[in-house]
Length: 125
Image (cartoon, rainbow, N blue to C red; front, top):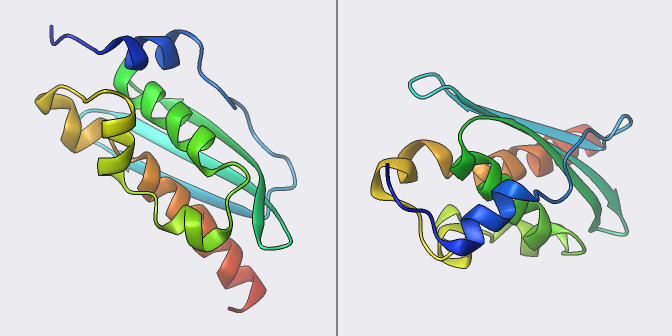
């Protein structure tokens, strides 16, 4: 088994912002059928900022840690700032991810971006 950084383990054991936003302004879902990781991000937008970010992730420890870190990184950011968060940034913030986890587990930023796109589409932007 690949070794996870302390930061990955901390976010896996105590994930932040887990759950669903019932009246979400945007929802983004992404999945990788190969490894079974599924991520759903829910956002609440106020004054062009992410007022709230929640996620539900079905997957390995790395996928859960990534989702937690993405939600923390995005909360309070403007939509433009949140769209600039990359999967690479998240892996770096977590102290790195094992190579075999990079392709599948590190999709959190993509799911977040989909939620923002969903919101913008609904707003007609």
